[in-house]
Image 1 (tube, rainbow, N blue to C red):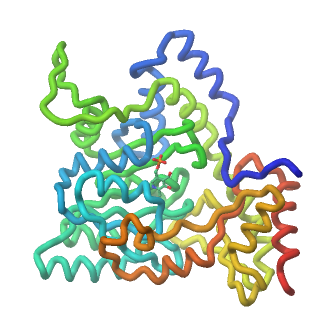
Image 2: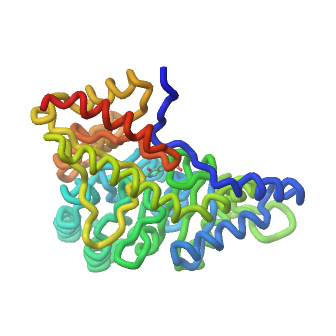
Image 3: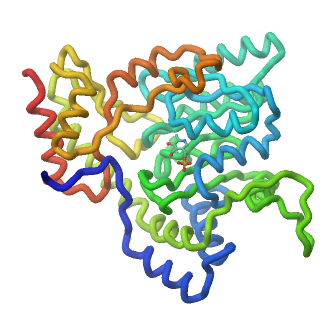
Length: 376
Ligand SMILES: Cc1ncc(COP(=O)(O)O)c(C=O)c1O
């Protein structure tokens, strides 16, 4: 069996170990420490935002975003249906109700016109949602000018799920910095990783100060342990922040390699009948965190699942696009507005190996297996 090719494994820059050793040498293992503060500051500089708090996961970042926005049980929160469950679970932790919004077919992100109609109907009934969570999928930004204009019109705050969009651009701005709050993930498969971690950002100091307090069991600033609100244990450790600093130093190199990988796939696969790629929208840089192909089974001669199984036989990991949240058994009781676009993307979409350490030879292996399956 040839060596396994993973979907998007961690890729260390080489600086991480030095930074971890520094943390050990200074005994900054816990609780916080200089690497944590530096990681937050450097991350703020990179995405151009004012305040950030580093956390144990992207899911924790979304949870704290909802907590600082004061979401109450039974409140509604609009969220993209085409996403990972990590975008939605925190809404349930709050006792609030997700309402799933379909994708628009070009960018695959939240459809602004569906959002607008849905908010208009809610406004007429006098029951607007308490927040909207657009997700920036696979490294492509949602259309934030449209989404912000609509949400501002109705006075509904936006929490951006930018877990997959580190390095992405929307004009000259970064996803995660346009809404009230932005959430990022440093999970192992992300473009940069701390093995597991997340970041919550905002230009509003009071929101990040509150999130920071909530993330460390809501201790009051007095010598003894005093609590006036429920807290969480969500803070990132200084050791993991050391990894994050090493990773962040390589982010632009990683984006460039993701783009080369996408170019390789596009060059070799876009001429194959039945295979297409999502376009980069004119409003900004798609990082191609994961390269995704859409498979028209009739034209290609096999469906996306047959391609996945064939790649797996060759020890190559690929994965269907996110299964929409409105199709998940656990969320079946919640409202969904539209959903057909996301469903059809799920049925056709396959994420190809996109790790930045992939060699051209490995990419060639993936491409030749797919080409051999084409019935043309
Ligand atoms: C869109 C999206 N939202 C949220 C998350 C949750 O992040 P984490 O795994 O760090 O909790 C992820 C990734 O894992 C994601 O892809």
